[in-house]
Image (cartoon, rainbow, N blue to C red; front, side, top):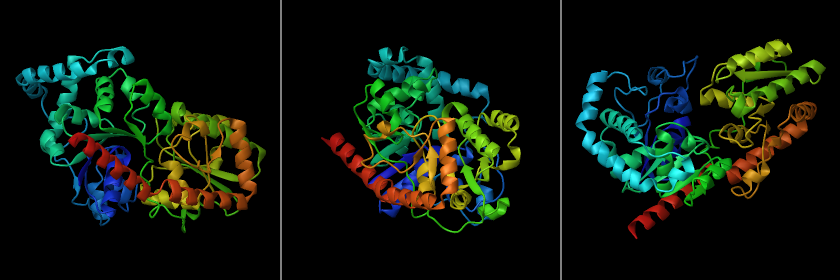
Length: 438
């Protein structure tokens, strides 16, 4: 079986392809996104230094002795913002393809059906035009996307990339992989909202990795979804030695807290975490230091709140950490703090648990019961007082921290391990291909 993972938000396409190849599946990854978190180098290269959000990492990785595997398809001359081609030329190309665009819109509009009432909007002609511009530009940077997709037995399309399958190879089997993209994007007032909704409906299967988005799946009327955990390689994310604490000059007698989550207050509940830590600092016991990562839409709001609370001396700032350095940070922390609002997790919690660290986060048990036979041993907390009380308890009880760390590692191995993820995806492919051939 030949599988293409198209799209690479948060490196999910690259990681899935790598793990499948470990299991003997011929899997490739089309990595066409330029945020640093979505470049394979961020996942596996021994990068040092600080990097702007959209800096290409090839040169820094090559200097460190790492290059992309040959199964990674990398666009040439690609700019994610579509710069580089004069606007008049783009307009001429659109005018020349107007009949084909109209035919594509008619085909997709016929399929849109009841989504009109669900989304309270129609699929507009210019929605299809804008998506087609993306498709055409990517085709020029790689190769024609339709023929590329059809050269594989099945395509697993990540993020917005199910739209490309819908446009370029609608008759070819594809699986849509969501990683938070099903939560709000299908209902957004954007060109891709209605197209992504339709692509989810037309997919052979929709892989859900965030348990809470089942609400959105039901809202869209999907009956083709299945849960598979985020791909986390527990042979890479492991307990081990770390120089993280020493590098920060934090004493062994201090509670070292680490939060790699973005400063996005409306998704991550960052304010709750900061206020709980402020209370810990105010009361003075146990002595604690909080390490924060310098990224996110509300970074300035977090800095302002830290000043207001007068806790700046107990905060250490680090830049976004490439994954090999992030593993060292997980290992060096006493407790990892995830998010305190949406009640579920992405990669942070299982990565930290795989490294043997206890995780404190908002966690809604009822959201997860449909997809995990055993719930993860995270420390659930949503309110400031709850977070504070758990930090005090964990700070004063090293044995409890170690117990939670061991339990988390065991849970990842049993219920979130790389082999489980690969096996479930292979079964999905087999079912989709069997259904397509019947």
